Image 1 (tube, one colour):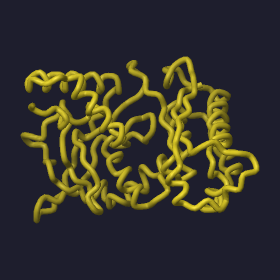
Image 2 (cartoon, rainbow, N blue to C red):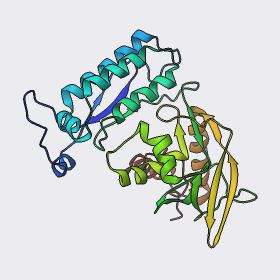
Image 3 (cartoon, rainbow, N blue to C red):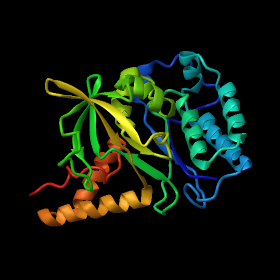
Length: 293
């Protein structure tokens, strides 16, 4: 069995009437985490059908035992949880790679359309377990677009790279940014509110881990850029790496930057990690936390 973090609302009680629970109450409830134990996070070997079904059954048991507003969400969004669960059990039986199954698990949790509920597979630091894809920069939603704000420690925006700080990305492979989120990201993470989905998930178009999001199908991505009064199209390559290699390269680059600026790298890494977890990005993805005293 693979390990997964699952975040739920408070313990669900049998016979309790959750159907009328107002959304403002759901938004205020406290959260807790459940961790599945396993021998190894995202194992190297391929899981068989029985193991995949066991993982889906374990995940569904945690939802049924601990997700308080399940009946309320069924009524709110018009779905039948038992029907959805059975659909995913059948899908788990089909031939698929581990990474395809990881995405299936995320889609199952996303069916609840709840910002209080998410799943995250325990990432292994060993090589050969997962991949990371990125374009070298980070940023955030800006209206309907995506605003570029910084670049990875191992990446430079100088020279001929066509994307610069404060550029706005207005299209992703011919789609508006919102349409791209709806098509490529929202099926695997859905917080239940349209605008919140765009704000939280837009960065995930540019930062992909094979444990939770589909990896890019093409070597390059076409972007429409707005820079001041000019709008133009560019095509840039995806950087796809083994996650362990990616993490080690970013960590080494952060340490080098810290040494050059004479700051405590551990303290800065901790700050970066805390902020990155809140933003759902990797802690070594940006060098902006390394500051001169």
